[in-house]
Amino acid sequence: MTVGERIRRRREALGWTQTELAQRSFVHRTTIVGIERGRRLPQFDTLADLAEVLQFSEADLTALAEDARSSRSAPKQP
Image (cartoon, rainbow, N blue to C red; front, side, top):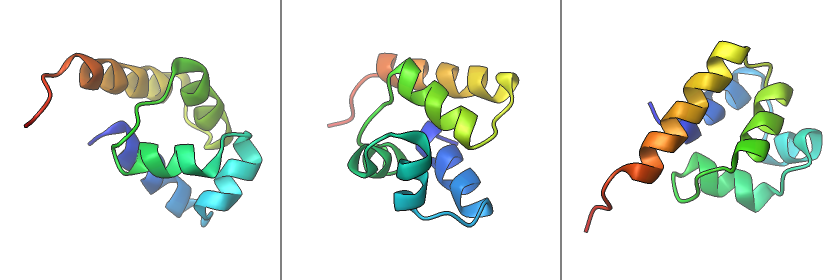
């Protein structure tokens, strides 16, 4: 599961829209859209802000960060 999928699933489980998550986390909605769609990889500070608002544990945050890091180093698909 990608970082964006994990974030989207948690957001939906909390019953929040992308706009609500943006307001609660102070992360721009278009950034959240990009992350959830896999078009953007969050910087660690953005990821930490989202994880805190979405009530991810420290272990979850570590897993999210590892997923983001591995996505950055993966070869690009044509």
